[in-house]
Structures are given as structure tokens and as C-alpha cells.
Length: 111
Length: 114
Image (cartoon, rainbow over the protein chains, first blue to last red):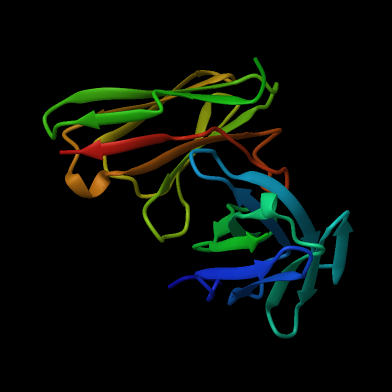
């Protein structure tokens, strides 16, 4: 049973537009959420995180939104750039316990 | 050299072979991890080491045997693997075992079992 789900396997966006990547979770005990980005032939790199006491965290072009009642988080990238094309993984943990990852969403930013 | 380094990058082995994957981190971290990534599946945690002590074994078959001689080095010894073990094996490290400390991943070893 997947506790963290990324229901869109892929997303295609025009350069300069907004990319919105979505993630749903089932475990209400999750209190910390992270996004990782992965390029081909490289390991995932940490992108941005959010604690459950917040509903938004922003870092440059990247913003993560958390909706606890809906058990949903999203990553917004604006404006999208071709270099953002990668696989994006959502991950969650409960009280510092092990990270649970989603299966990833492939983002393609077209120039 | 900085970050997390994994060798080899690619490995092809038969089911009767014995091989080892190596991971080294230059970040001064105290926790190290092995993850498995199969195609179109979430990353699966295999093992966790904190200050050289194994703190988690996520029901991994005994044909995978980890070794952590110090906080900077982590090995995964492989023997009598099955074709379904073919995957990307990722090593990661973090400041400590608390998962809110972001993981730093290596580039992985692409393993093919024939």
C-alpha cells in the first residue's frame, strides 16, 4: 500500500510557464515533506521541504504548498526552465522516522 | 572530492557471482543508507547505519549484506542474486539518523543480474 502517491507519471510544460507537481499521502502522522529532483544518471538531490506546521514554503522559483486536510502537497515552479526537466520525487516522514517516497513525476519543459 | 561517491557506476553479474558496491561520503555525515530504485517504483529503503551501527534492515533478503566500517564508507555485498534484483542502487548520507535532515545521494550503481 503506497502511502505517498504521485498520480501523474509525467508532465509537459512550456518554458516560462508554471509547472505544478502534485503529491497525495494517506498517513496522517506524516509531519515533514520533501521534494527531490533527479536527472538521468545522477542521484536525487534535495530541492525543498516543508513542515506540517506550515502551509507554504518558498525558495526562489520553487514553492511547496501543503494542504493537510486534503493530505495533498504540490510543488510549483515558476517560471519553468528547460534545465528543470527531470524526475521529481515527493517524500514524507513521521516524527523523524524513515522517508517514504513517491514513484516520481517526469517533468519536461519545452523551449 | 565532495559529496557522495558510488562505485562502480554500472555492474553486470551472473546469479552465481559475488560482487560488492562501494559508497563513500565526504560530507562529515553520521548516517548512511542504501536504497533500491526499480523502474517506475518508489525508492525503497534497504538499510540504515548511524554512527557505524545498523539501525534498520527493511526486510531485505540475506543475499544483500551491508557493511559499514566507519561513518564515511558503506558497502553492499551481493551474492547469488536474482534477475529481479536488477535495479539502481543508491547510497545516501545525512547529518544524523533523524530523517528531517535531508539526504544526500550518490549517483547510484546500475546493477543488471543475468
